[in-house]
Length: 330
Image (cartoon, rainbow, N blue to C red; front, side):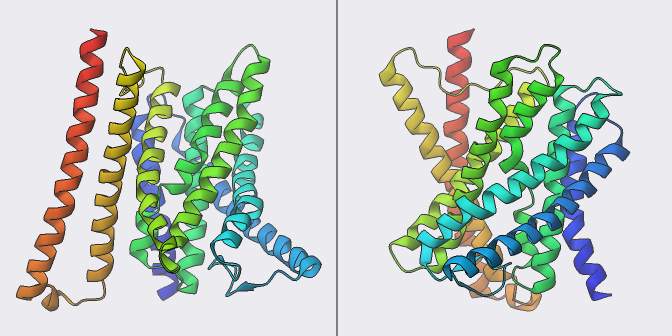
């Protein structure tokens, strides 16, 4: 029964997020094919895990590069540099490659029977990525290497990784004229996903190290917030909607100023989310009666107020940039 509840917690957040994107895409494909892509994503996750195990076995045999702990922990004795190399050489390419194959093979089969739209292929990519997430959630929860809270918050991450090549693949496959420049989009977008995948994993592991490396972890949530913004922008593009413009200055100086504001808003908003995440992690082991203690309630109020202040400030900067762009274009 415990394993069943772990499986439920592993699968439900990705399924709910897939349903959210399914409802947002007009003329979305039937739900059954989408669920099949979700299952294919889970299978690709197990394939990636097997390939990673084979890669590490062969590599350790050749150069005696040893890792601490099991494969799931992804911790390397060479420190942060070793983690970065492992992510760039092994984890990122294998996982993004398995997801890419999980989208391309069934999509090519369906394309023989149906005319697929870019938004449909993009939705297939999200489904495979979320299926991959469900498999990864189950592995982490089964081995006890992550909490339900951690995995639930990380639900959209694999979809954000795969968004660039999902968009490029949608543009290329759905095009009636296969242009060379469209074909070149896919490898570049896939490489972009691998780099972002590796960078996120490196930043998420930085908190385990001593200062000043630990400060790198404060770049994690701003990066994730930007990747979520990119996912939303690409979703608008595949649906034929205009993207949201934030950088609209006429002069280089003005554009640099607006880019600085965007970066500042990402830092504020991302770390506001990070602060709330740390607060939730601190409170999760407590019983309900302990949370209503006066000192703990006061601590919660201060932390929530502080992070909400930074989050609202980031939102105000975002609204200002959107208003400035609309005012210039209309």
